[in-house]
Image (cartoon, rainbow, N blue to C red; front, side, top):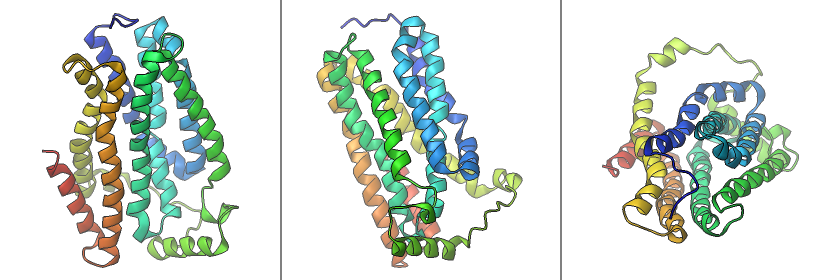
Amino acid sequence: VQGEFEWSKVTQGHILGAFFWGYLGSQVLGGYLATRFGGKRIIFITILGSSIFTLASPVAARTHAYILAGLRMAIGFLQGATFPAIHTMWSVWGPPLELSVLTGVSYAGAQIGNVFVLPLSGFLCQYGFDGGWPSIFYTLGIIGIAWCAFWMYMVSDKPNNHPRISEAEKQYITMAVEESVGKYTGKHPPTPWISIITSRAVWACWFGHFAGDWGAYTMLVSLPSFLKDVLGLELSSLGIVSAIPYIAYFIVINVGGFLSDFIRSRNILGTLNTRRAAMLIGLLTNC
């Protein structure tokens, strides 16, 4: 099937990779801003901005390939702040022995999004309006904006500020977090940048994420093209097949989070060794 644009593989690679260059640039900044201004606002801004840029993507693509690439980089920069902001929120919302499940659910949400979006994209690409493929961007952009309204209504930065949870739940969360990290005083100590940069544990985490994410994001970017160009799948089935790895991802994240918290709560392993075991198992099974 001939597409609307005759872009070379190099240009396609630049467009697909632009998101990740933007994503790389806002990780630390996102965590800092979430700590300073609250994760709720930062996540709202990142998703709203990403949704607006997504709506503009078809116009950008029809104007010039590298305008689209610039837009994708901007979307990546915005979304790069999302997960650091989520972790900032869990630091005040998550009881320590439930954090593996809670953060796992957060990450699993991204995967279940892929499970639904990939088949939907295949369908819209073939049967959607405005030539098919633009309807993917319009549909997802509108959904993202609607989600932002839901987010602002439902979420609070801290348990004490939430109007719709019980007093017992507020007390449980607050006491569990304070027991683990101490009472929040509203003042943030200086960030020990030198200690962070020279920490072996930080670099071990960095290399672990690099090793795991290399495969995950390569699959995300390249799998649809591989299925279409090498295996010859039709658009109608391309999205469904592309979603299969993310179904497994969703299941493993939730099961892994539950098992990690179970192991820690029963004192089978401490937090550090539980994390080491999870990282080791996850990376070895990818080999």
